[in-house]
Length: 259
Image 1: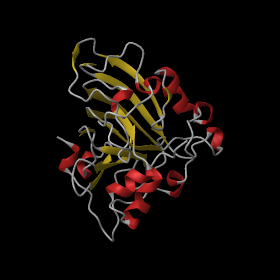
Image 2 (image 1 turned 90 degrees about the horizontal axis):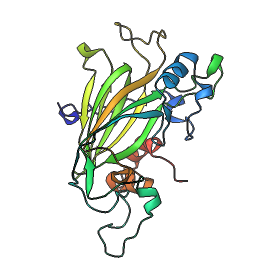
Image 3 (image 1 turned 180 degrees about the vertical axis):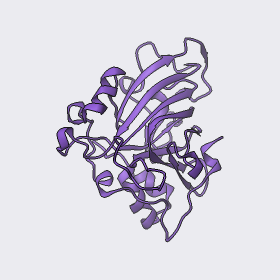
Image 4 (image 1 turned 120 degrees about the vertical axis):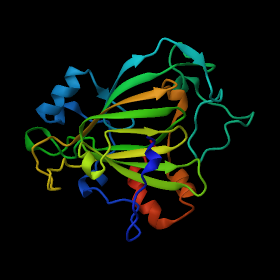
């Protein structure tokens, strides 16, 4: 079932319940494995996960050798606020858009990755500074099937392909009786952001017995390429929210800062 089947309930002008302040203010830097708790380091090391620009850690586990004709444009994805890349005067840097051997006229039929976000300030031995609790708003051209392995969190989807842009959010976790999702799909052309939440006990309270994380697999169809990926920038957020300052305020901390 597609993620769009369940939309956020907006109460008191909230797009979704905000996370703890430590998630919102977590620094936008590549995560440092050495600052993670030992149990998190064990997952990272066992699966050879690496720090990822979207936030958190990832490792590609499968790239289908079957190649298919690309259904996508022959120019790289560009953030929502950029000028039209279909313009004949548009140029791009191949070094940042291609991987070695990539042919923009073809795609692998699918790719699969592990992806891990970790709790804010979950530093080693109780020290602050560890953790990568949020995945920045980004978009892919392909559809992505997500499967939860461990943890709990919230996904925020900006339907950039709809006018006006619809904001959707839902919980992912193992409490399916309360509506949490263990599988979800995000179609191409939509921005998604993510943040980690505490795992709840059956009474709905965080029990503190499990490390905070979102640990999932993602399968992208057709296969993932940096050529098909872009981050949402601040200007793009303002455009999608049509200048609504309250909506922008609630979402801006999920926008990746420009270097």
